[in-house]
Length: 321
Image 1 (cartoon, rainbow, N blue to C red):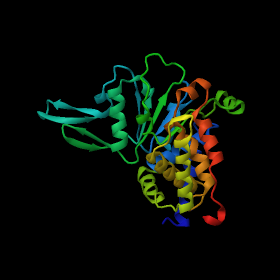
Image 2: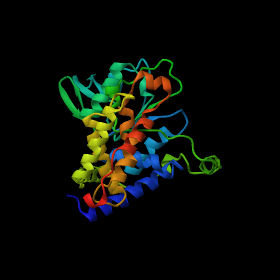
Image 3: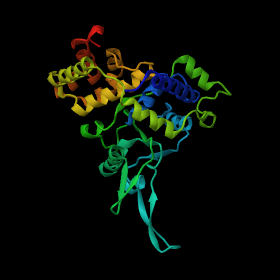
Image 4: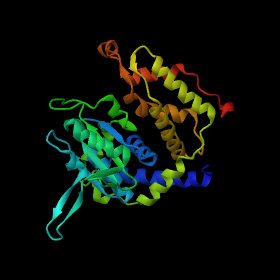
């Protein structure tokens, strides 16, 4: 089990990383915290948002605070899998074939407008996300650790896009959006001389090795059986809801447990409470649910269905933890 001293050290690190990133991405601390949860939980993030809301800035700021390497890939219909993962090339100086790494060999990878690439290119990225290894000519090449993919989708302009199937959406640990800033934060961004958006000014407050170390330890954070039963009941609630054609998978529930562990530690606790599960449930589970056709036509959203399930499932009492 992870002890209280380690939890305290992680909370301090989480706060320092969040403060550093927020110096460039103003007024979006909740989104920053979600991205950090995914990074420490070993998962990836899908951002569904319109252009110009700071998605690239967010990914690069996280890499800057981490002290790692960031890469950006603009997905287009003619992008090939090798453009993402890398390929073997002939070296005329040595007369040998050598591997030339693609942009996925970075700590933070921004996959911009992932739904504009063809299915085979999407699959190439998703395979690396899952396996954390690129295999070229039978030789495996491991990506750096930590490895976080921040993929984006534009929910407005759908011309020339290839929708991500439900099975591929399930590969993303979290789905969220940045959204427009508040009036006060937007004024701060617009003010001449503001440091918003200046990646070069983001302080490096950690290292990839430190993040990897904490990531492994946080997987040992205590989750009591009543909390696990509560999470299982939430899964059953989504699978039996008549408005859903597909409820959350067991993998989705395991992901919820993993994210709740990191989220609880970021709040300074060495155990998970029901509120942790409730706070993180929507970004972890909503994109894994599939509505029936009738629900889609009636305007219901998966977030609304999940909120109803959360309100119906009994919450474990404190005495049972």
